[in-house]
Length: 90
Length: 395
Ligand code: FES
Image (cartoon, rainbow over all chains, first blue to last red; front, side, top):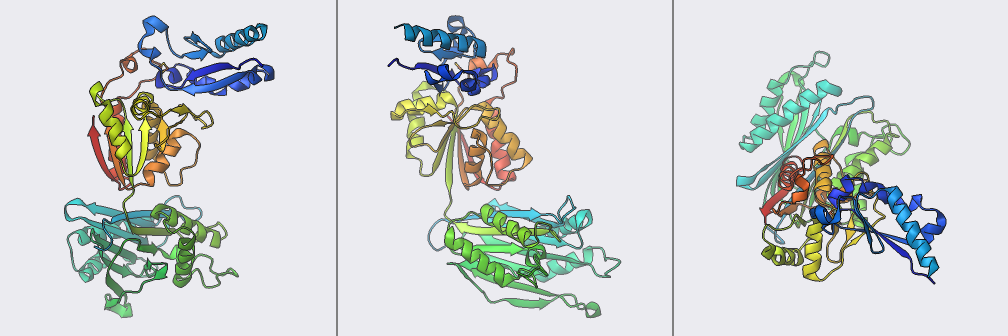
C-alpha cells in the first residue's frame, strides 16, 4: 500500500490572515479519491514567515516535502495531485 | 475564616418582561479592594421598562454608596424613599432593594427591603439566620419593613437573591397556581446542587432565571433577576501569551506553566512551541475545532487550551466588551477561551514581550494589534466588567 500524502497547513497568525484560513475546508475541495490518499494536518507557525527572503511569502502549506509559499487552493490541489500520482507510479 | 482562602463569586442573570428591551431590575456590585469587602445590590423598580430601570438604578446606586460608607440601614432606606419620585397612580414612592455586604473572612450583612426573602444555602439546606425587623414608612398607614440579618459565611455557602419576577413566575399555571414561591425555589436550588455541587454562580443564576422563564411558558410577565453569591475556593487560571523577551527565559516560562496549580492556557504558536520543547510535549493542531474567522485550537498534554495569539486574543477582547454569559456557545478557540476565563476567579496573565517582526509589516491586510495592548485591554475588561481578580506580568 502506498503511503498517504501529507498536507501540513500553517495556521499561524500571518498565514491565517494572508489566506490560510481557506485551507480549513481543504478536504472538501479534494475529490474522494484524492481525499482518501491524503492526510491533512495543521501546524503552528514554523517560522517561515520570518524569513521571507528564503522561503517566500505566507501563507505556507507543505505537501510532503515540498513547501508552497503564497499558497492558494489551486496550488495546493495541484501539488497534492502530483504527489498522489507520483506515489502511484512507485 | 473557616476552611482557608475564600473567594466570593458573584453573578447575575436578568430577563426583561416580554416586549421590553430594558430590564427594570438593576444589579450592582462593587469590590472594595482596600477593605476586602464586596457589596452587592439588587433593586426592582416600580413598573417595567425604562422608567423602572431609572428608579431601580437610582435605588441601587444609593444603596451601594451608602453601604460603602457604612450608613445605618434605616437611614439608607429612608433616604432612598425620600428621594424617589412619588408614583402618581399608586401614590407611593416605591422601590425594593436587597443589599449583601460581605467581608473577605465571610462575615456578611444582609438587608432586605420588599424583595423576596434572600436564600442562604449551606450543605444543601436553607440556613435561616435571625432576622431583625425595622418598620420604616409609618406615614398614611403605609408601613414597610426592613429586614436585616448577619451571618458568617463558610466556604461553599451560597446566597441567592431574586426579584418578584422569579418568585411570581408561573402564577396561575397548574404547576404553581400561586407562583414559584421562595421555599419552592430553595428546594429547586438544593436539587440542582445535589447534581452539581460545584456549580458556578454564573451557571446557577442562569439556570434559575431560565427555569422561571419556563414557568411563565417562555413569556415573562415581569422582569426577572437572580443574583448568586458563592463563597468558595478560588479557581485559578494562567494565561501565557507571547515568547519571553530574552531567549534565556524560555525555561522560566515553561517552569511557570508546569508548576501552576490551576487551569492553563497558551495563546500563540511560538509560545506553545517553547513550552512544548522545554517540557518535551507535542503540540497538535486539532482541525475539528471550527475556526469562525480565527485559527483552530491545538492540543498539548498538561495544558487546558492552546490557541493562536493576537487574532484569538483580539476576538476574546471584543466579545468581552460586547458582553458574554457562560456557557459561551461556539466551537471556535475564542469561545473555549472565554469559557475558561469566565469560569475562573483569579486570572494570572503572563505576556511575553518579544516583538514578532513579521507582524509589524504595514502591508498586511489587517492591522495586528500589539499583544501587550490586547492583554491590557482584556485585563481591564475582566476586572471591571466581570469582577475578576487579575494579575498581569510581563516576561
Ligand atoms: S505564520 Fe505560517 S509560517 Fe509563520
